[in-house]
Structures are given as C-alpha cells and as structure tokens.
Length: 250
Image 1 (tube, rainbow, N blue to C red):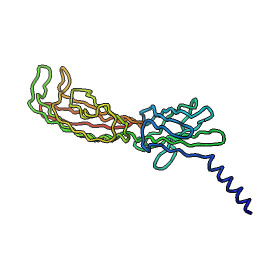
Image 2 (image 1 turned 90 degrees about the horizontal axis):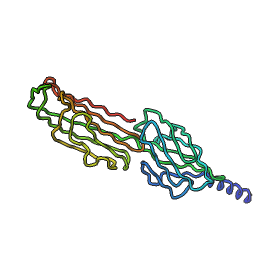
Image 3 (image 1 turned 180 degrees about the vertical axis):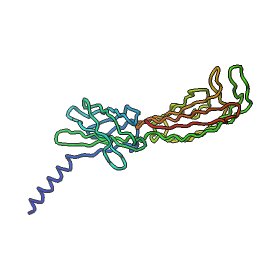
Image 4 (image 1 turned 60 degrees about the vertical axis):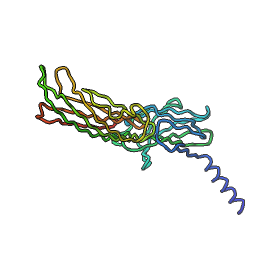
C-alpha cells in the first residue's frame, strides 16, 4: 500500500513540473517585459493600436517552440483574439473593437521537450484623455477680407491617464494656434498627469479668422487615443464662440 502511494505521488509531481505559468515579472502593463526564467527572455509590443496587435519575443534556446498566442481580458480571462505566431518570434493579428479601454494580457504557450509553459505579458488599456477648455474673445476688427478678434484668451485643463508608465503624448495645432496643453510632458513617457494652461490664441487663415483646432494624441502598448477640439469663434460675438470636442481610441 505504501509503494502504491509513493508511485501516485511521483506521477503527480512529474505532472506539476511539466506545466509552468510565468507572469509579467514587473507586474506593470507596458511595452517590454524581460523574464529571468522560462522559455522566453523578452517580449516587446511593437504596435500602438487597440485594433491591430503586433509583438516580438525571444526564446531561450532553439529547442523552445512557441506556436500558440492569445490576447485575453485581464479582468475576466476571456480570450479576445487568437493570434498567429510566425517564425517562433513574431505575433500579429487583429483585436475586436469595443474593448479599447479594457486591460489585457498577451498569453503565449511554449513547448520544450515534455514541458509546457504559459507566459504572460500585461497590455494596458488605451490611454484616457479628459480635456476641457474655454475661450473668451474681444475687440472685433472688420478686416479687408474677413473680420477677426484682436484678443483671443484660451484657458485649458486636461487630465491624461496613459495607463502605463511608458505611455507618451503629443500636442499639435491643426488650425490656428493655441497654447501647448501638455508642454511639460511633450513626447515624454509618463502615466497620469493633470495639465493646465492659459494664454493668447491665434485664429487661422489669411482670409478667415474664425477657427482654432488642436489635438492631443497619446499612445501606449494597448492603443492610441486622440482628442480633438475645434473652436468656432463666431462672427462679431454673434454667434458666440462654440467648442466641438471628440475623443476616441483606435
């Protein structure tokens, strides 16, 4: 009887060793994870899209075969997409829409001899942008081609959550010129920050002095979020300045 118990214990022990789960070592969502043990040394997400995913990984030796990958919902562990693996090093594929703001994980299954390993890499939700602004205008001038306001005062506040410490943002003037809302972090990696600015804005055009359009774009390994505001300054206070604001992730 004792011998039978010993045999059963040995089988259970061998079964446990043959399956290994390796989680994201730094426990943070981001672009890169390096692993100190297991079949993979590094995973790097190359895409910045919430709808199309691409990544590369590096195996520890030639005997490791990683042939299966999925992106899963990190909250529910539901599989969101099955992704093909090319050349034992590249992963690429499409992700469903509607889960841009959901934190995810990349799950890679690898085989080496009789051992199976599942390696995880955290993927952040796409950045979140909450942006508000106000414009006050004064001193209307009847120009030779079109009228314009001599004074345009712009006040703005934005909260950006990149959902990852390596997320980056840029600010651009598309039409006219408004003060840079995120100048202190322009192009730098950061997670969450609140920005405020105030100053003079310039309307656009040689013949039309009416519009000021700006955008904030933030990117991380889980996607890109674009916030666009368009100020229609109106005509001699009738109508008054009006703001159109759009934010979306892709």
